[in-house]
Length: 375
Image (cartoon, rainbow, N blue to C red; front, top):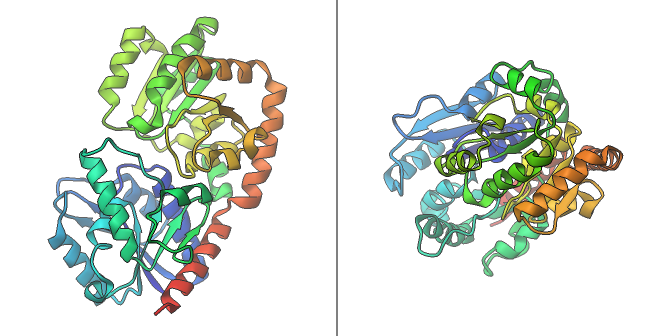
């Protein structure tokens, strides 16, 4: 079976890591997957493309004008047909819209999409428009994969239960644990040498990740733990706003914002807490990575996070994302190491059992065969 995975990525975050794990497993299953990685003409090699090549995974770099580029979408459609791809698998709203909106008779190739979650953008904003188009486009698809059961309430009413399935994100745990042993370069080495404990945040610098609340919470926590530090890994439109808040609070010497970096597993191994004060999530791969590396987790009770954390057995679920609440949760976790250890052990067992990349790939293959067998 030839499967063309379509993505326009902005880094090496959850969706990208899941895709790489899925493609690696699909090669082992005997499938012929290909990652088509889209980007603008001036873009250099993307992090996803670099990582795919490093792992020996098939990837095609595709450059195109941004926006609603229907001409480029048609070129991709023609390329897929010419190379005998039997299924298109979209990862993100861009290709959901560009190719999913075409009727299948016109497109000529069946398409499915994996939905990692909506950001619930402000009404009439650009992102709101994209999300609205996305919700329309997925109705024309053979199938839709949700990363958790909690996302079913997000779906348009016209999508049948048979057309949509929940397949949890999966993790290549052994590869992750191996990567965590990598050494850290500067500025990370000096930062860890000079700060204890270190709090970690990972994700796009966007509104829905709640990093502004985390920064304010850390400022409060630091008053009791003056040697503490915080690292926020990721890039995005809110960088300037977050940097201004950090400067306003006078904590710039104790907060590191390195942008995108490839050494997140090694950062997990050295950090004391992962904090995820998100407004919305699907099933974040960052959460699974932290658990697989036995890092205590403090997170919002959104998306699939409560289920993964055993509704509190495997980590701290925030009652709200006010800075004071987050700061208290960090302090309690740091102070009660025995309780944190019990939670970490419970969560690790759950991830090993239920969230492996092999189990994810087996579920995807079953779904592929089902939708391709449909009329």
